[in-house]
Amino acid sequence: MDLASLRRLNAARSARRAAVLVTDIAGGRSEVLEEGDTLPPHLADAVRAAFLSGKSGLVETEKGSLFLNVHLPPPRIVAIGAVHITQALARLAGVVGFDLTIIDPRTAFATAERFEGVDLVADWPEDVLSERPLDSYTALAAVTHDPKIDDFALAEALRRGCFYVGALGSRKTHAKRVERLVAMGLTTNEIARIRAPIGLDIGASSPQEIALAILAEIVEAFRRRSLSGADA
Amino acid sequence: MSNSLDPLLTAEGWAAEGRAVAIATVMETWGSAPRPVGSHLVIDGEGNFEGSVSGGCVEGAVITEALEVLQGGQPKMLDFGVADETAWRVGLSCGGRIRVYVERLG
Image (cartoon, rainbow over all chains, first blue to last red; front, side):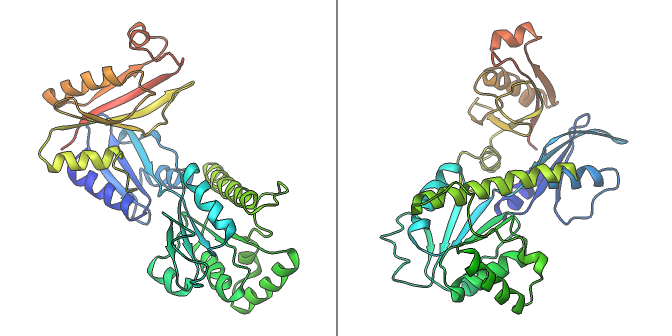
């Protein structure tokens, strides 16, 4: 690997852009391709498959044996609502290996004391998400119960292709939410991606158990996504 | 990715300090292998290392080979596995096989 390739790869990883390092086994030469780059024809199919599956490996091409090392951004969670559930989620997410950001404009909820050591932003999702955009490697969980806070973030998550979009609330609450999102211009297909009621159905009762159910559902969404990508 | 244990960030940092750096990469695995394809171990000319290509079973052998690659410059493909007597000695006792590519950075 040459130093320029290593620098480009590390820069892509830092900026949460998917990248593939291609190494020519015989010659030792290397090259970085990022998601969205124009791909060389002999590699295009293999690189696209690698971006979808996240799986690294050797490929045989007309130009010899090449190793594709895929670097997908680590999945992260953005939670809307500095509530009891997300206090527990903050503890669990770290154990499983997700970075977590919590956004809530209500300063009575979003206090450093309640969320010690957590990336907590006491501001409106509209403002925070324009500066720190969601992406397809982000899960969004909206748990404030307040349409004024949750709705924009949910719409933005669907538009940005978040791999998981979940919203707290009963089926009745969700039906009203669907009406509001349609009025905001989202299609019913897009809205159908929202997991509601939020969390795997494990009969969760306490805020801690609900946090666990949400986190398990996020893991499932990410792992299953990578498998379906491998089939594509 | 703020992790100081990230081997590729470590390699870039070492190179910036002017240290010779070898990068080892798991390229193929069979059976039960402790680290997935794509995992890295990076080694400097003094034998300092960061990362892993197995659960600690073959790192010692990879570091020795890496120091040779740093001297000679040519990349090497190393095979470790149950079929290989030497590999048993260095101890990939999990029963898997791995191929590790070792190259010089730069």
